[in-house]
Length: 407
Image 1 (cartoon, rainbow, N blue to C red):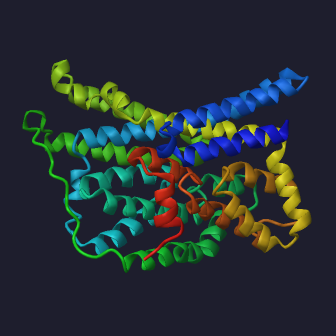
Image 2: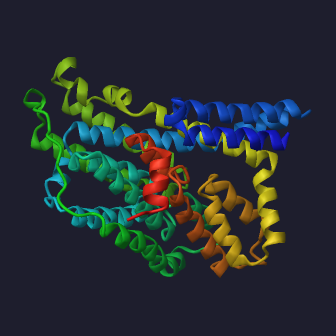
Image 3: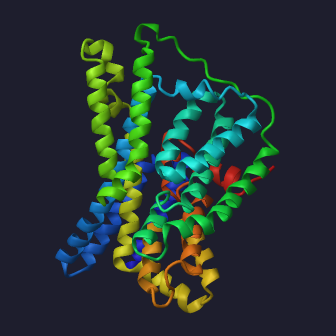
């Protein structure tokens, strides 16, 4: 049973990787993989109630991630619809590719530590669409945004879900993780940034914006929507810290506030005039297939977690490898293939705080490797999956141009 589930997962993984070759949308492959894994699991178990309860428990976590993603996408779409990003793009006046690369990466690196790597990626990909016309240039920048977002999230207790897990679990403390991982995370960004800088030469071509004079926004509308939207995103980690509610609750609170604001701003307009700037229109415009892709991937991984595959893998690493540094590095590479959340959860279950006390080297290494290792493959992190869906990045393009960088 477990071997069959692994086989289904591998075949689904290959179908996602060869999306363009087999001409099947990656969301369809991911959904089939996830449902088939759970189907095999429940058919092979006598205790159907146990499997159903495990699925329900995982779905509570998965739905939180999806609601978070949905809320962030709609907020970003509303800002974009009200030309709010023009306030930023007009200040990024440089057309030099190399300078734009450095500006984009450092904004992403520090913003992901305040927000989180997923939200930051959504914001930065939306910005790059407004700044860079050439698709190849934009994809290189988006690839570096994924690396910068994951690197920036690793050194902050709020920047990456695995770092947050370790923080909540008591394995790390906030100030220590910032102190110990800031420089390593910065190096993780600077090395690929310096390599890619050698290739980024010349000027970028900015997209020609269509004329929407009949739907132009006022300065008040742009400023108010942009201010509330960014404020709502920044408020999410504060809301979580104060209330201890999941992050998606803070995101939905921000979306509700944005919804009220846009309704009040456009209350005097007819449906045709305010249509493109309404929440209803934003919900139709966001990339639903990328959300379903995310759902399928997470459902498939949780099936392997429920059957014990990932825990067995962690135990095998412990008994075979033994060295904690090597285990941390391997977990980093494995997080590029499967979700880093169950890998870190398995590590938390295997090693108690008596074995490795809070702020020990092992937990810092796990936070760093699990947070940054997902950048190795485009589907290895939430930031990568979001970028893949938003800009339709091919798996093998990322593998050749980012994972195995070539000059």
